[in-house]
Length: 341
Image (tube, rainbow, N blue to C red):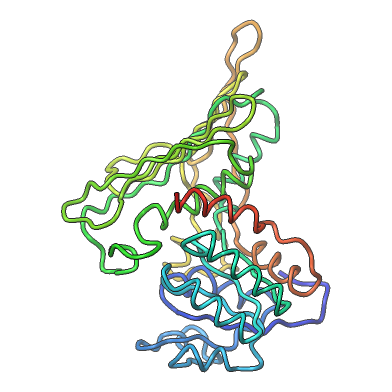
């Protein structure tokens, strides 16, 4: 993606695990408004295989003390986001922070104050707003074909009947468990459309043998005009259900989770490769509407091509041109209040 400015933002990544390799480095490398200078790799040195010109620092302090780096991507374990964001801001860096932004709204507010004091941007990495399947949902809602919305269901399911190796997800520490892992994705999608709910009700579950953290959650969010939204996630779903189910006075829309970007990038596909971001055929959503005579009409709704590049363009525009970033502080505080409750 090209910019209308000659300004290049020098960026650094605090980690090169899955999120650094898949969700950040390819996009910083592809967007001509950024120069990816350095990545912190404490043990395994893999980044230079993918990006030969990028520096591999052994310690976070080396990256934070690099005066050329203007933007730091905080993609370390969940429980360290607050600490590492604070350190980066104190070093005078803009920050792009993985979800969850922090563990609590109090931590978030403290970082907001610090960012304002030092005159730097805090930007939130909520990439699922740009998933192909979610863009289809927004397209149907915007069309008005459902009429008044009654209910909306969002699911994000997996089957992992073992305790994973990542301590920050599986140990009973701050911001661990499925709620803090996938909850930020689902809640952000809802909040991006409807804003902060009037009320909500949350249920957590622990179903895997010996689990120390929640591996199931369900949240009902209530909005004006009797709009009820349900978000659900489980690690023990053998046969995943539709990820998006919407019911309105005039129709229903059903859509599978079908965005392919994560899968493609993990397989080594490039953003410039043919077929990048295009959902497989047969994954389109189904819109069923009914007229006043009771006649039903079915319509296949194709998704847009998925791409997270617009997120990075929004980061660029926020830093260089002070344009409003689509994921606001109010959105994140509304999310965190639900997560921490």
